[in-house]
Amino acid sequence: MAGAKEIRTKIASIKNTQKITKAMEMVAASKMRKAQERMRTARPYAEKIRKIVGHLRQVNLDYKHPFTIERPIASVGIIVISTDRGLCGGLNLNLFKAALAAIRAARNEGAKINLCLIGSKGLQFFRRLAGVEITGSVTHLGDRPHVKDLIGATKLMLDAYRDAKVDQVLLVHNVFVNTMTQKAAVSQLLPLQTIDKELLPERWDYLFEPDAAGILDGFLMRYLESQVFQGAVENVACEMAARMVAMKSATDNAGKLIDELRLIYNKARQAAITKELSEIVGGAAAV
Image (cartoon, rainbow, N blue to C red):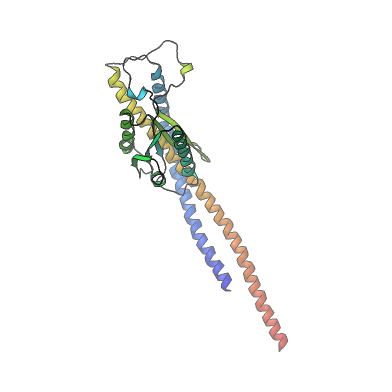
């Protein structure tokens, strides 16, 4: 019965693991609903301000903001938003693949790479990558990221663009599609791009008071902060959904493994009983 005892120990161990994964699944499901609500609340503002900024490229201004000027790309800055914790399936892996594809494309054009990393997993992964410079990083934002926690690291990248140390800024983050699907997205933050050009009236313009320079300086910074914040909020929702799915899969797999071990245990126990009966019958026959 030594084999049966060992199997019983394994079953007990897997049951304990199953309880943990089930609890983590329930916690992730609860946090996911709250994260989705924050994400949906932030989306309209982020999308509207993105459209307005996209239209600015069509405005006839005497003042040209540095963020609207395109330069030959000799250096690319990439802001990568990852999670602080693991146990969320292939969420971070898919994100890193998208970031590496963007890095590879920039290197093929002869550009240098500067990274701004948001999240512990991204920092752990990219600090081992050769040939890239980490301009700034921020970790441990929690389940409710705030703009003030993102400003410091993001501003380093924006200042680098303003000072012509970086000629293009990309944002890489996860986008929440639904509970089962999250996809990595790469978007260009700087220089600003024209959006919905074909839908704009032929003759139109914005009126700036008191002056375009003062308004655009504050407005464009607010826009960039909102895009990074939206990426961070979306990433939290993606993390919770991916963790819930991963923990449910782990719980189900633990249940299947327990059933298999129980079958093996019953067979081992039956074999042991049969062996004992055979020994008893053999002993009785010998007498």
